[in-house]
Length: 395
Image (cartoon, rainbow, N blue to C red):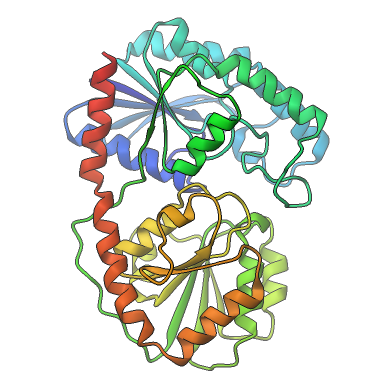
């Protein structure tokens, strides 16, 4: 098969789990003999192509007031203009359509598409190419993609401009995908509640991990706590730092991995506690080594987290997960089995769990064993095989 993946970002310019997923799946499909190419925004102000691990990458530069890679910390007015242009970006449509016409793929698999315009759906549909869409977040129903309002709280009643934006976007993309997948049942339910993709077949397809690994033996001389993710309010790193600082044990270390807009504030919050270490963004072997050394990974999200890759990666390295009871997280983390769940935003409850473990590290033994066993359900080989079946079913 000839398969086109459309993604807002693509390696080596990685921002989160969605583009890690696309990169992994694209290369696995290539290894299986399929012809694979990726369409993604260019980090420069010009379009170019390159080949990465036998995958052809088309980096396009649609006309807009800035590119997708420059979206952090832009003023509100510029962001409004950017998203307005992106909504109806005819230049993006023409660039994508031209590539699709030239390459003539059997399947177009759209992932995160902001920066490439929702007209990417129309480009594929106009050429009568079957479309699979994977909802990695809430972009289809929220301009912020996270269902949070400007105060960082769950948005129960969107403002009128947001409602207008969502209504227009729904009109552009709603009838385009043949199949919609999501890594969690929670996200799929949100799509249904929003009245999206009613005519498409819907499939919950959990994120994949490498399962050809071995259980990891842990040391308990120092208990290493890991946070991996964007240093942004909705990921809750401040909640973890506050909870951690409630503990007085000297045998604890908190390792914070990632970059983001709140990094300076978080460093100030951690100031004076040399047990808290900021490592910046890590990937590949460096990241896996941190998971293997860690005794627990904490996800203190306050948003409707979909199905975080951090959980999968932690479990496969025998590292239990302590996480907020929100979004799709409880579908992966079973309280008392492969980790613990706590009320989103609760510094007190999280601190209590960390204190309990620090006082009795033997609690971790059973959790580690179950964490590893849990990860074996998410084999990347099975995931790719399932995607192949989905694609072939559309041909």
